[in-house]
Length: 175
Picture 1 (cartoon, rainbow, N blue to C red):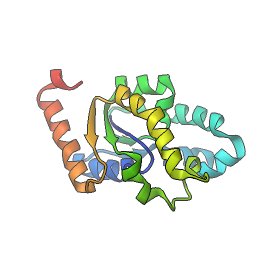
Picture 2: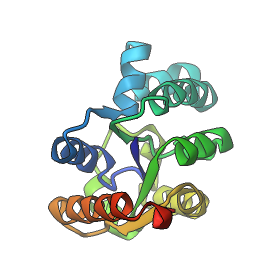
Picture 3: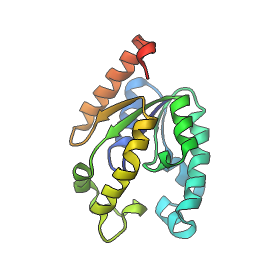
């Protein structure tokens, strides 16, 4: 399993989909899998049940998806908040952190209405808070970090593929 972690909007779903095709592996988007399980959008579920209940469902679905050996998984931006999720990701697969700063992400997220945590008066400040709270957790979870901020998606995919090729060619340097 190859898993991608990072802030909302860093490209996990787009990059993951492309990696799945390039590696000829199935692609799973954790957020889409959760929405299928819930029968509603994450934003709707947040409004109905709250973030704490959402995080419980997120952990259940993440556990199921990380037990599959082959595939590419795009995680939710907050999935690393749970120590059990971080451990499962790190132990069950190869994890790449798509690093991007709030300043790099804000232009693509400022009008996004699908991300419940960013539906606040100052979404840029919220991105800064998320980055401050999560950057260390993403780094703790990841085997590799790629600077994805401001980079074309194709470049990020190529970097991920190079890391995968290196890891497969020399497994003792994988982590």
